[in-house]
Amino acid sequence: MSINQQLLNKYNVAGPRYTSYPTVPFWEDTPTEDQWVTSLNTAITDASNNNIGAALYIHIPFCRRLCTYCGCNNRITRKPGVAKPYVQTVLKEYATYLKKLGRERLPISEIHLGGGTPTYLTPDELNTLISGIREFADIQEDTEFSIEADPRVTTREHLVILQSLGFTRLSLGIQDFDPTVQLAVNRTQTVETVETLTKQARELGFTSINYDLIYGLPLQNIDSIRNTILAVNKMQPDRISFYSYAHVPWIKPAHRGFTEDDLPDGDAKRSLYELGRNLLEKAGYHEIGMDHFALESDSLWKAVKKKTLHRNFMGYISRQVTPLIGLGVSSIGDSWNMFAQNEKQLERYVERVNNGELPIERGHVLTAEDKLLRSHILNLMTRLETSWPNEQNTPFLESLPERLTEPLNDQLIQLDSNSCKISKKGLPFIRNICMAFDHRLVNKAPNIQTFSKTI
Ligand SMILES: C[S@@+](CC[C@H](N)C(=O)[O-])C[C@H]1O[C@@H](n2cnc3c(N)ncnc32)[C@H](O)[C@@H]1O
Ligand code: SF4
Image 1: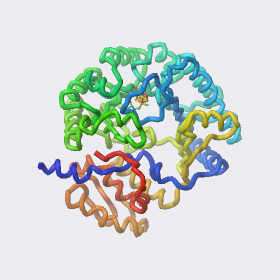
Image 2: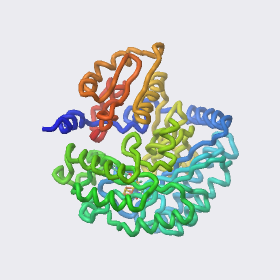
Image 3: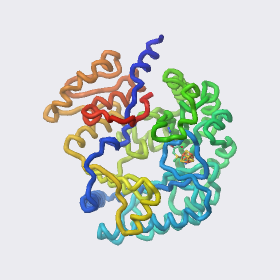
Image 4: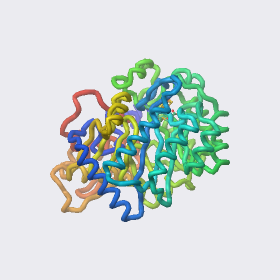
C-alpha cells in the first residue's frame, strides 16, 4: 500500500464540512424569536455604520426530478402552480421580518437564490419575488446577487429577467458529463446545453459563472472525470466547485440506490480529485481552501490574496457580509452571535408564516468558546493556518497536541503552542485538522450517524 493510500485510509472518517461552527448537529440553544430579532437588529445597525447591508439567502425547494445523489433540501414536483403561492409566502416572511425588526426597509448588499432549483420559478415568478423584496430594500453599492441554476430548466428569458434585477453571478449544476454516470444518478444534460447558457449569460453581462461538479459519484472513473474536466476547461467558467460526493443514505434514502460497489472507494475517490485538480491547474485555475477553484480574474481568488475569503452555509465566498437572513423553507440565518434555521418541512413552514410568525425551527446562541473556536476553524478552512496569543490559550487549545499527534507525525501540519499550519501534504485532510479544534465534537460524538466521510 502506498503512503498516500495509508494516509487516506487512516483519515477517511466521518466528519463535518464546517460551513458553520458549531456545526448544525451540535446546536443546542435555540434563540427565542425576540432574541433572534434583537440580535439581527444590532447586526444590521453595525453593518450600516460600515456602509454595508445585510445578505439575504432565499431557498426555493422545488425540482422537477430527483438527482439520486442529492443532499439538498428539495421538493420534487411537476404540479402546475406550486411556485406562485410559495413566492407569496416568502414575501410574507420578508414583510414579517420588517414588522418585527421595526423597519420599513432593509439595507441589502447581497441576495443569493439557492435550492432546490430557483429557476424552477418562471421568469415572471422570479421577477415578482425579487421586485417584491427590492420594493422594501435599500440596495447598497457593491452588491452581489447570485443564483443557483439547473441548466436543464434555465432559459435565456430567465437570464434576461435576472440580469435586469441586478444578478451578476450564475452557478450552474453540472456534476459530470459522462452519459453512464448521468444515467446512474438520474440526471441527463449535454455539454451543448451548458455551453449555450454560459454564452448567453456572458453576453447579457453576468460577470462570474460557477460550475458545480462532484467527484465520487457512482460509476465515475478516471476517464469520465478527465472528459468532464476537459469539456469544462473549454468553457472557462470563472469558478468551479469540485465537491466530494457526500454519501449519507441514512438521511437521504435515494443514496441507497447505489451499492457500495458502484462508488469509488477512498483511494480511487481521491485519485479522481487529484486528476481533476491537475487538469484544472493546467487550465489556469487555482485551488481554494477545500473543493473550490477559481481563475485569477475571479473575486474568489482575489479574496484569497486580500485575505478576505470567508466560508458559510453557501460554501466559500469572497467577503463576509453579516447578518445573513434566511428566507424560505429550511433557510439558515446568521447574526454572528446566533443562528436560526427555518422549518425544514414545507407545509409547516407555510403554516407558520401564514400565522404571522418567524418560522424558526431551531438555532444556536454562540458561547464565548464557540466564537473563539469558530475563528480558528474559519482561519484553517480559508487560510490554512491559525494562531492565538498566549492570553487566549485555553485548556482545550493547550491539549491540541494530544489530538493532533498523528497529523503531526504524518507531517500534515506544523504545530506549536500558539499556532497550527496545514502543510501541502495535509491539504486533503483539512476537515480532520479542524475536528481537533471542534470542542463540541470532541466532547460529545453524536450517537447517530451524522456526517459524510472526510475524503
Ligand atoms: C442546489 S444544487 C444546484 C442547483 C440545481 N438544483 C442543480 O442541481 O443544477 C447545489 C449543488 O450541490 C451539490 N450537491 C448536491 N448533493 C450533493 C452531495 N450529496 N454531495 C456533494 N455535493 C452535492 C451539487 O453539485 C449541486 O449542483
Ligand atoms: S441536485 Fe439540484 S436539481 Fe438535482 S435534486 Fe438536488 S437540488 Fe434538485
